[in-house]
Image 1 (tube, one colour):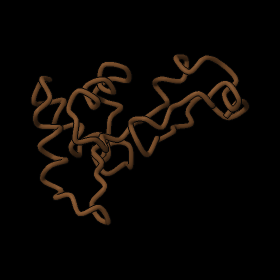
Image 2 (tube, one colour; image 1 turned 90 degrees about the horizontal axis):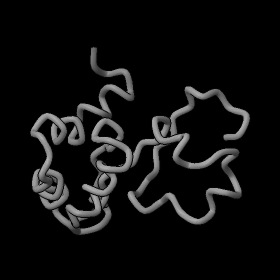
Image 3 (cartoon, helix red, strand yellow; image 1 turned 90 degrees about the vertical axis):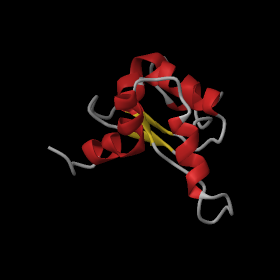
Image 4 (tube, one colour; image 1 turned 135 degrees about the horizontal axis):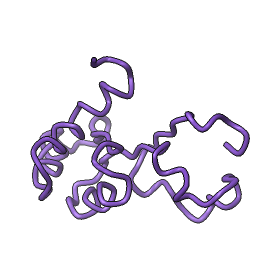
Length: 107
């Protein structure tokens, strides 16, 4: 990522994907990349999702679940986002609006 365009977007496949390896692969502090990073909400623990929202902003959190193959009902993942104490608009962004915008599926 050191030499790539600043418009490059990175989607992490789990809230906890960003770890101690970043100094080895990033050319500048992780905080300078924050508006290029997207995190998914794969967690059944609303405080973990809330941490991602506080760190990256609701506009950079995408809905995610481990279903399938994990036998956890999809509804539990949706309910974890709905349980967040954030504005309803932010929840809707996380539950689909952000992905649609990122993928060019919305106006």
